[in-house]
Length: 268
Ligand SMILES: NC(=O)c1ccc[n+]([C@@H]2O[C@H](COP(=O)([O-])OP(=O)(O)OC[C@H]3O[C@@H](n4cnc5c(N)ncnc54)[C@H](O)[C@@H]3O)[C@@H](O)[C@H]2O)c1
Image (cartoon, rainbow, N blue to C red; front, side, top):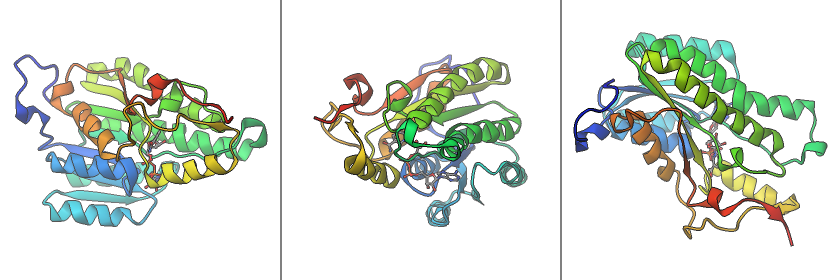
């Protein structure tokens, strides 16, 4: 890693050639787009997902000439996370980028949910981020860049998503603290807060909201249109690369202005 930029940025500074990037939740949606973008910028990648469709993403990246390690695992499974990081280290001899993207939720107002649902959401959206980060950071021997994928819901009331949004807010806070603690190791830590990307996960949630929520989000982003997950992938690639060498502890919204628009309201 090159660290803080000192010269005029060059187009080649966006390159991730010679880097190894680990992406969780890489089988579809934002994680798939991030993995394919990192590979097209020159990185070798480790793709972690519980969905076997991750193999198709790996095949496309391998045929484009990059090296890939695949981990078929649930990121909530701590021993499996440790095992896969050992395999990544043996194959690549280190890691430069980590994108903590795996996450998800279901729609239920707080008083209609229960302890089991809470525990699943905490593990899915927060504890797994802790475990993956703790396992991967020791592999960042020459510095690195961590990008945590959070949500616009980390910053606003999110009816039907109380625990999910609290865990995304916790990950935003973790991002800031780790930025300080890991700076001495040359590791930058930032967050990307997406919204308005109709991925498979997002579309099934939107259908649940339309069917049974008392609340509605803004109908469209102020920018006018929803965006594909590639909109987030470009920003993640920027944060992984040298152009962002002086960016740490930051959070970038990639949501067409949804966060600025002010959030959920009662259905009329
Ligand atoms: N799409 C959006 O507009 C949006 C908005 C806000 C936040 N996000 C966040 O972005 C991230 C990606 O969301 P997406 O829209 O691409 O979702 P998605 O459901 O389409 O894709 C998520 C991927 O992660 C994998 N995954 C989820 N939990 C996992 C686990 N425990 N172990 C292993 N793999 C797991 C899934 O198998 C899937 O391949 C999530 O953290 C989500 O909360 C997305």
